[in-house]
Every structure is written in C-alpha cells, then in structure tokens.
Image (tube, rainbow, N blue to C red; front, side, top):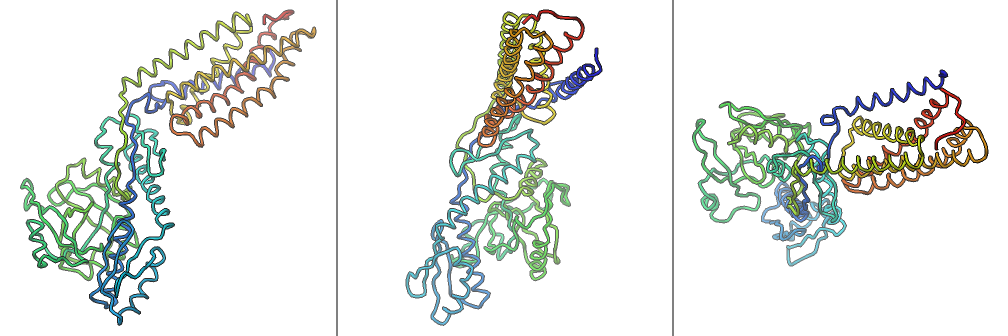
Amino acid sequence: MSKNLRWKLLVILGVVALAVFAFYPPQQKVRLGLDLKGGVHMVLRVQTDDALRLLTEGTADQLREQLRTAGLTGITAAATGTTTFTVSGVTPEQDAVFRSALSTVELSYDRASSGPGSYTFEMKPNIVVDNRESTVNQALQTIERRVNELGVAEPIVARHSAADQILVQLPGVTDVNRAKEIIRSTALLELKLVEQGPYPDETSARQAYGGNVPPDVQILPGRVEAVAPGQPATAVYYAVRRVPAVTGRDLRSASPQLDEYNRPAVGFSFNSEGAQKFGAFTGTNIGRQLAVVLDGRVQTAPRIESRIDYEGRITGTFTSQEAADLALTLRSGALPASLTYLEERTVGPSLGAESIRAGVTAAAGGLLLVMLFLLVYYKVAGFNALTSIVVNLIVLLGLMAYLGAVMTLPGIAGFILTIGMGVDSNVLIFERIKEELATAKGVRQAVAAGFDRVFLTILDTHVASLIAAAFLFQFGTGPIRGFATTLTIGLLSNVFTAVFVSRTMFELVLSRRQVAKLSI
C-alpha cells in the first residue's frame, strides 16, 4: 500500500470517527424539531391598534403636561380615537404659547381647527404605517427574548402570512399554559405618583373628586398589602398621576427576590437615564406614595422615604414561579401591544416518536432498495457505492449534531434525498468508467479518467442544488428551512464521499492485485 493511499484511508477513518463522536448517542446530541419532539405551535396576531391608541394617549398626556408646566390652564387634551386626539379651551391669549408647544407633536400629527379654541390632531398616514410595522417588529423581538429565556431548544419565532401575525413554535414544551402566559403578558411597568387613596371601590375614588376626575389623573385598581404574612389582601383603588415618572423601558435588569417577610418579590434596577429621572422624581416627592403599576394594576404603593436612584422592588401576592416569570418578562421588555391567538396546536411526543419511526423506516427501506439496485446493476462495484453512501449519511448526522442543526420531518425527507444524491453521483462516475473501459483502456486508467472527467459535472450539479437550498433557507418557514439545512449539509458531505471516499475504495482494491477486468 502506498503512503498516499494510507493517508487517504486515515483521513476517511478520522472523519467517520469524528462524525460518530459528534452524534452519538443520538438521543442526546441530535436536536429534534417540533414535529419530532412534540411541543407547541402557535400563530399570534399583534393588535397594532392598541399600540397606536397608547401612542396617541401618551402624546395627548405629554402635551397636556407640557402646557400645564408652561402655565397654561383650562386647556384639555384627550384621545378620541385610535389615531386622533382633541385639544380644547385654548384662549386667544394662550394661542401663541400653545402653537410653540406643538413643534414636536406636529411632526407626527396633522392639526385641524374644530371650533374656537379647539383643535383635532390626526396621526399622519405614513406615521401610522411605520408605527404598525415597528410594533410588530418590537413584539417579534420581545417574544423571541422571552422564549429564549424559557430555555427552549431551537424555538422558531418568525413573521407569518399576514403583516401583523407571528408564528411561534416551541419544541419540547410541556407546560403550555405557562409558556402562553409569558409570551402574551404585556408586562408594562410604570411608576406613578399616587394623588389619593387607597379607596375601597372605584366609585369612592371618583367621589373624592366630586365625580369629575381631572384629565391628568386616572383611577387604577390595586391590592393593598396584608399587615402580616398569611392575612388576605383587600381589593382597592388608587387615584394616580396619568403620566408615569419612569417606565419599564428605563429598566436595566430584573430578578426574583424575597421581601422583608420572606415572600417572593421582584427587584429591578434602572439604566443611567432611568436612574436620573427616578432620582429627581423621588427627591422632590419624599413622603408621598409611589404606585408600582404593572399592566394597568397597582401592585404596591410604598411611601417614598428618601431619594431613590437605581433600584426598586415589586411586592405582592406572588408565588416563587410567578415572581420568576414576572422578572423574565420585565427583563425581556414590555410588549408594545396585546396579542390574540389565532391558532394553537399541541404536538404530542408520541406523534413525534411515530414520525421518527416512520422516517427511519423510510430511510432504511430506501437504502435497502438502493443497495439491491447497485448490487444487481453494478455488481461488485455496487459495494463501493454503498460504502460511500453510508459514510455520507454518517458524516451528515455528525455535521448536523456538531452545528446544532435541528432535525425535523422535512429534514428527514432531505436525509432520504441525500441517499438519492449519493446514488446519482456514483451512477455518473460508474457510467463514465464503463465508457472509458469501452475504449480499451486499462482498469486503472479507466477508473482515474472516470473520476477526473465526472468531477466537474458533480460539482456543477451540487452547486446548482446548493443555490436552490440557499433560497429555500432564506425565504422558507421553519419546516422548509429544516429541509434546506439537511439538504445543504448532505450535498457538501456527498461531494466528499462520492469523489474522495469512492475513489479511495477503488484505489485500495486495485493496489492489492492486478485486475484485468472490473466488475461493473
């Protein structure tokens, strides 16, 4: 055996050994997709109207606060629709100052007069489109962060068919309700100044203002903390400032903690901008109550004892799991809008196991039929082709495990297609060798010429297939991407096995004895 041939054999054995090491045992190292492992498939719709309404209400609130700071009294600003709000009560003496305060607002809203001292503001059409698009993108990113923190292996979070729909697939998830709650939770954190309260009911809170609640104040439900652990909490209502001092967007981190009674709580810290705003706010409101509002409900309302810059805490009647989930959703950021479920499908692990068995049976059956064809049609040379195909499948599994690619049911189809690609490559080589033998060349020369002259053909067909696989991966959804991934890896490994492994097997046989006739 020549030194060159020995090195080729060592390379082949080394590649096979590394591939086996990469995927064995397959139950632990081969990652399965939703259709094989079981899990949850959901299609969600982002209610973009909610985001537009919140933006409009926030703009109206900020304008009203800005006018109040400027000393303009008697002016009201209130949202009247998803993208419209009205301002009324502007006197001729206030008009100049009022117009100067609109410099930022009129970048996004068209203003029209609706009477003496009254104006209607409507969001510009291009701003509406941009906000809808950014809302869906932000929801997509937020859901992806939350799902990743759940520890789900290879989740799929992507745009679905419609512009406001999101596809979520969570392989291996068993606690479906918890996953849905974490994904759907808006987790909008706001810290607001308490004006009055708590009150036992909403009516009492409104009566404190004579039934006419000011536009810069809102009534929110909440829960008063029990005096001691084990005592029930009572439902209450607070009158709070409408414009928050800081929001969840100013958070840096959040984590589950224990309060002074050893009950689950959630601690949070602010980023530099949030700390600056919160420090200034608490410094000027010492002795007053601060409402910690989560998704429109007051969780707790502690008294501000001193200036607070960087940290805070949410207490309440949480379980340890609820505190951990709340910290997770706060860390991942608030959803810009609510979500509705259009489709929910749970894939059981038994169905996945059945799919695996069916896929393995199909692959084994296909390999058996290919083996019979190769041995009948190409005789002894068929063993050579069969060896290269088996090595190809081993290398394919090893590369998928090493790269962390997910095996799906379409991926199994790509796995089976790889067998066909391997057969096709070997058929091209064998037919070329037979043509070379027909020209009365020796066996060695015919084998060498067959591989040399077919190499470019094999390379050309595989490159064309790789281009198609790249487009499938770029524009396809989860299952199509699984097929494209398997196909790509199979094509790359097939070039190695069909050209290098198969040729080395021929050279190994021809190096041991003089062969006058090739069984092909």
